[in-house]
Length: 199
Length: 361
Image (cartoon, rainbow over the protein chains, first blue to last red):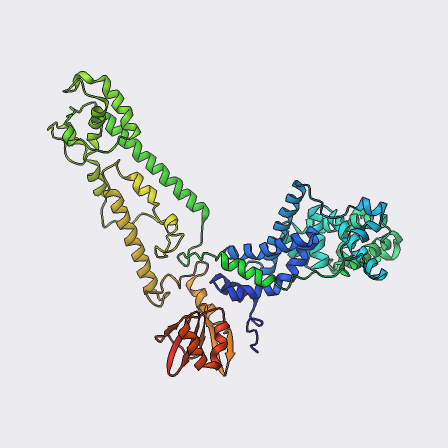
């Protein structure tokens, strides 16, 4: 079996080769970052189908605009930036079209079983698994209700474990803003999760 | 420290983003402040809850879908002269300058025309009149001419005749009336031709070095094609655009010679392909010395170079082309079964067998 010779090639080199037209080099970049991008987009949008479409668009767009990548930052921060912009656009379009991006917290407060009954995975699962699923959906719903900017910072920090510096690059905002948004996101989540007796 | 500041510090504390001094200060406050301890604990639990969530992974077919999408809409690789950075603002300024130049030239032509037509004794010889339709300015002037009908030789001239008449001063042929005033201003063609052939070419905005097949070339050439056509006098005179085209060609040729002579380009055939748009020549050389990307098959090393796999030892020899889809290729690889896996490789492959070099495309 052939060893994947791209594994040992640095991101920078892959970018250069991709810029020169190598689709294989770009595919290696896709392989490296597809899961991270997908998870980030999913956590921001909150819907699997939309996340799939947006994550695909991220890589297609990145490939077509690769020549504008100057190498000042790491390639993944650039990919995250594209992902976040596309995810925001999708959220905005969804809101404009009146699409419901999940179960509202109010409905959870009134009837926590809503999550189990609406979650397509949860109906026939054993009780313990159903509870885990319920908690997951509740956490995601709380996240969905955060303002976009706060949610994005929180996702990049908590799920992707990026530094404040990297987040400020991705979101094109000062470091102080990142700190402040992260603090606000945690404070709002704390209040919501306390109301739902999760904390 | 205010409460909000304290909570913000807690957020930074759990993210390990505080300096050592700030951390010590906060830790001393935490020892005394129970509320602050609760805040810290709550934030930690929130993070832990969210971190415990399953990481969503892209579907298994994700990469194939991306590839299909990219193959359907391949990226246009743009070429431009190495060492020059793209300056979009400069493009705009240059375009604006061209526009101003064109307007000025047009106004100048009109003013000359207006000044001279009043002194012309116009011949209304239909046989020598140009066939081209008049410009808007000419139409305006023809209306003025209507008021001068008594001065015309044929007072019952139709509108089309008067239009033909006002077009005459644009003709490159000297007027047949012998009126000296016609010779005081040289014909337009002469004025354009007086531009010296040997003078330096106009300063380029962002000269493209790509050959004409490059998609972006036409729209970003040093002198916009529209400029050449607009600068030419109406209808018949194409000399100015020819001159500009010649100058553009000579400039490109000089730039190409310069690139070839400076050693940035290995050969004339590959001069555009090797001129990468985002790097200077020196950077390209530095990159070429980077670590090789090697694929091994049957004891052979294939090195990834210029977007194809080349068996080690290949140094530009003539190759026999093989097409992946051709029947002969299948037969070839049935006779050379150990090499058959290269049929699955996505890029072209250069390999040697039976003392000959082959290029599988």
